[in-house]
Length: 279
Image 1 (cartoon, rainbow, N blue to C red):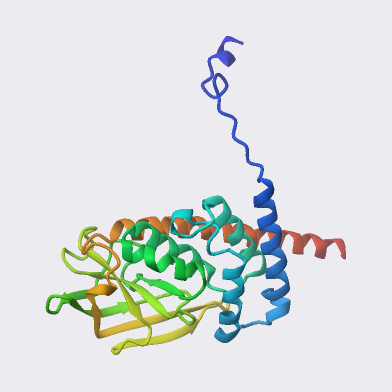
Image 2: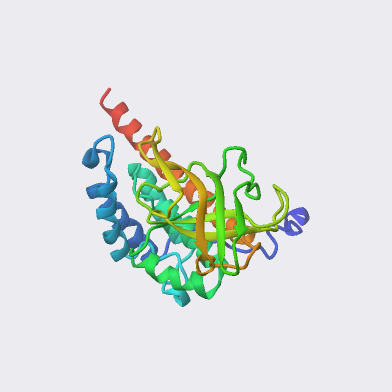
């Protein structure tokens, strides 16, 4: 009909191919095999010690899962969001406890978004599994608002900063060796400008960490910074310009969590089907 011919969704429409490439299918299958053999509920029981998770991490790095979603210019394998979601979906299928989301997605994306020489220097070590940084950003009163940062960073001399404040729900902190900490160096409480990112060693004097096991057996931590001294060399980006990197990293993090939830639901569907077939 004439109306049909003038429909903008038909005339000149773009065809979208939702099929996976051969390489993406191979990635999904290899991730599924490893996680089902090493990280499934049947394999690990109800909980998993941090030591065992650290043992898995070099294997995860060797398999290339940390490199696949990152561009080649930083040592990655040139994949993107599709590959990241495929990996996270498989993590959801077995309710894996390994902190791939915290390290391989959020921390990796925040370093990528900072786009400085310091940040780019850290990424190859993350990809190789030689460092395990996680982002310490959320605070009790933030209520999901990314620009809410009450933790304070005060300049001390020409090349040092003093951090004071608290961070909550720091996922993966139990196996982390560094924290990428957001702190306010200027501006008001919810200003987007004035947020600076710092790389802090987990053993830094004045840093207190309380690990908490969540209902799904994953671990997070409450961090308290009491006059923690940070060198200017541990500021990977520009002073006061950390919001854009945080925003990009948590956008990827939200996408990854949605993919993980899809994996959980898919597995629940098949478990339910198998149960009903026995009734």
